[in-house]
Amino acid sequence: MNDTKQSAEDLAILEQLNLDYVNADQASDAKRFSEFLAEDFIVQTPGVTRDLEEYLEYIAKPRPFRDLTLREARIRILGDVALIHGTATYTMIADGADKEALYTDVYQKREGVWYCVSACAIAPGA
Image 1 (cartoon, rainbow, N blue to C red):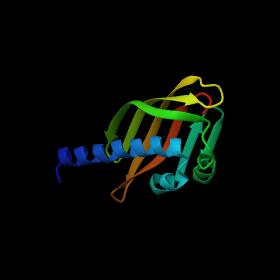
Image 2 (cartoon, one colour):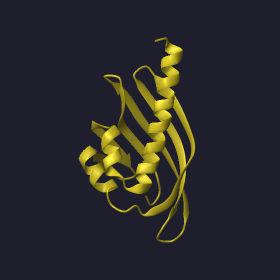
Image 3 (tube, rainbow, N blue to C red):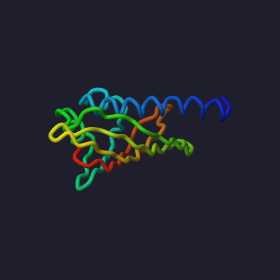
């Protein structure tokens, strides 16, 4: 398989994984997360670092926001690692305030499959 075809396929997979991440977050879908987060996954949000088990427990709880919408995503494939830099908007349920989140997710291709190994988000209130 040539690099161009591989990159196009990888890009499409990563675009879908990014959408799945956003949708699973809004839906508190820990099961979907467990399918594409790596065993050694780490996530950081302001003041908190969680491993995979802690994150799945956290994400299974009802989300404090609604209308999570992806606004922009830039995907950079660097060999077997990919970075996704994104912007999303959401509305806090408690007070109706509109917020914006910035995030960077790191994916690694392991035995031909992309897994999210790290995430870092600046998401006020979420």
